[in-house]
Length: 135
Image 1 (spheres, rainbow, N blue to C red):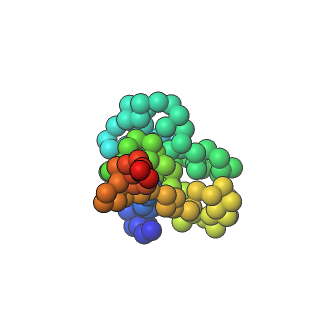
Image 2: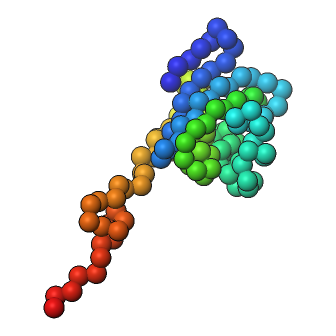
C-alpha cells in the first residue's frame, strides 16, 4: 500500500487466490472503472462481476467520485473482480480515516486467503484418492 500524492493519484494493491490487481484512484466528475485498458463492462463478461469489483465504492456513503484504473493479472475473472474490490477498498482507506472504518466494517480490507489446495502424490485430486478395497 503506497500512496503517491505527487502524481494526484492513490495507488494500492488487491489480491485474491492467484490474482493481483494494481489500483490507481483519481478524483473525477463521475465514477469510472478501466480494467487493463478496457471499460469494466467490456472486460468482465457479466454485470455481476462489475458489481463485485465496484462493491467497496458503491456501499460507501462517500460523496466523492473517482476514476479508477486497474492492471490485473492471474486467476479467473471472478477472483480478479474480488482482487479489484480488495484493492479499491485499500486505496479508499488511504484517503480518509472515516472511510477506512466503514470499509473495514464491510470486510473488504481483509485479504481472502482461501485458495486451491495442492494435489498430493498418489491422489487423484487434493484429497480424493482411489477406492480402497479390504479384500
